[in-house]
Image 1 (cartoon, one colour):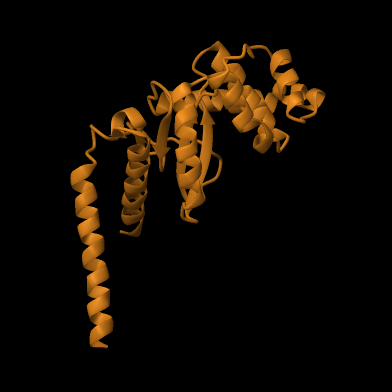
Image 2: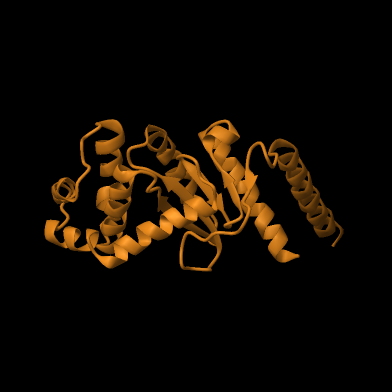
Length: 213
């Protein structure tokens, strides 16, 4: 019993020490911002939402993506991870629609990395619905089905909603990560790609703690 009490006390003390260390390391207003009002990137209220704001034509997003993928492999079950395309200009809006059209066809696994390679790395000119449809066909996605989804009401509504979330979160660029609909951080704010995800971990723990109170 004494050993169990000692171990439990040690775990609690370590958790408190870790929390204090993170508190000292990650500062509100410097490494992350609290949003003026809460936003939600998905229709689900399950878990703690972590939303990556991205654009397929963004080179920094391309560099950030492997770090995000590695982070996702170990993320806790109570995290609801969401990709949030940023329709911040005409081309980016078309690419956001391409993302949502691919999702509607359950083809994101086929197109996600390919879009990054084509737009951010190879700088291919994929700016029209026809060009994007031709491209996804190269990835094995049905061209006509993609165009139907791309031009459909559902994809249009999702793209408009994404823009609304970005405005509410005061997102100025990509990549950006929104946590629990309350906080915004980014590699530029945190000081690097790994640092940004460390801030995300800190904010997730912060949200867990506040929810438990």
